[in-house]
Length: 152
Image (cartoon, rainbow, N blue to C red):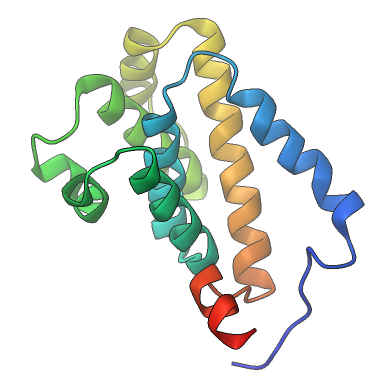
């Protein structure tokens, strides 16, 4: 892998609005643990190491169990997640893989049944934000934070 520029280093003003949107979304009723699960799941799908590293650590710091973090890619095959989390994870997968099947009605129906209107918008924006950060991380091959620390 060839070294690419760090998109955050000298371009903070360009990235700041995306960071601010992510912070704004957090104030609309979504649980911190649910938001971290959504960020991790989108990052798994997109293969974004820096985001996986960051949000897995953040989830654990906020009290998320190791088992739930590790089993996230197989959430359908376990009873570790509640209906609200399952609806959010299905919506995350649908919107992250939008070109494959769009946003199916059955998945939206589950979101509508588990989230208020404001929460639905906040969840959708959160998914958009993490997908944008994943594209920055993967596009510029930003290494996981743990690797950045070792290199420093």
